[in-house]
Amino acid sequence: MLKQIEGSQAVAQAVAACRPEVICAYPISPQTHIVEALSAMSKKGELGTCEYVNVESEFSAMSASIGASAAGARSYTATASQGLLFMVEAVYNASGLGLPIVMTVANRAIGSPINIWNDQSDSMSQRDSGWLQLYAADNQEAADLHVQAFKIAEELSLPVMVCMDGFILTHAMEQVDVPERGDVDTFLPPYEPRQVLDPAAPISIGAMVGPEAFTEVRYLAHHKQLQALEVIPRVQQEFAAVFGRESGGLMHHYRTEDAETIIVCLGSVTGTLRDVVDERREHGERIGVLSLVSFRPFPSAAVRAALQNATRFIVLEKAFSVGIGGIVSSHCRAAMRGRRFICHELIAGLGGRDITRASLHAYLDRAVRDEVEDTTFLDLDHELVDAELAREHTHRRSGAIPENMLRDLAAREN
Image (cartoon, rainbow, N blue to C red):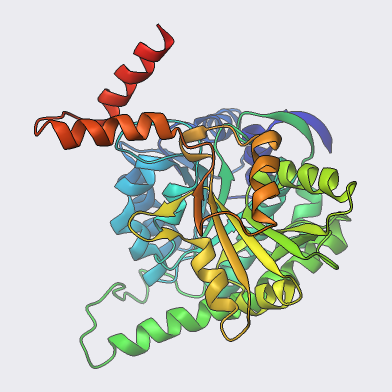
């Protein structure tokens, strides 16, 4: 049903339509509205026999989800930022046990310093945890991906993170065709667990594995991720057949067919980049956008095919690896190994900083002439950085960087 609705509410209703049997909830911004909405539905009896479990921490939320999934229940939870970091040990356990839990990650910067606004550093920090990671470009896709995530997770017996940009999507009001329960029932079969704890046939899960089999266990985890490269696009096609729209899959192409320059991205910045591309196309520039949906597994072959005819590609990153640079760009470079290409990294939107069309145009004016450094931080305040570097050079006890910068900004404003 088409509704003017907040992104979090649309996701909550999509999750409810999937008939979860256990929801484990602990609030942390910006995902709180999702679990609040599901709590209200549970209280009203709209979730049927679903058990809504209030827990005391994010670690407990994932631990309870593991127990519920191992007992054969369709399980869901949500988190963000520091909450995801708090549950990390259990996050790895969920994937190692092959449990098909679906979790929303409402992307938010991780500290320190404390920051509640959006970037993708939280989910990117867990890129090697063994979870599938799907990134939504808008709230329609966020709702649709949750429906697809349950089917993908349960077919592969692997957990799935659905990542949506915090506040930018979670708190945005827009039109969303919210998946209805009847259509979801047609698309998503009842949950049949691949492994389940049964009192009539007791077993242990999570047993210790020594050197004699650990390599094989990890190989199979990798093998199942590669299987997902076939399952994800097939599930997208099955979704389109039932719901009549394209959502999900491995990636989205926008005006890339004849593009000399392709911008690679994930998440909500896709919309802004498409506007920029349209504006530059009006002036005859051959440029396009490749928006990745699946980051784990990384669709190397599909990325290689999409970029093979471009002169250059620019990867816009809303997170980066300190000490080395871009994360997504390193994957793209690996996918293009053996081919001649020019790759630029654009780090943007950290901690919720606006990514404006004007800033992107200014950067692209130079990038298409290859007059930019390999790694660029969009709208970096060089004056602020240089002042702190000078302070550290001059004073041994220079103090904490965040506080120093806040004082410098306040002095500038006065």
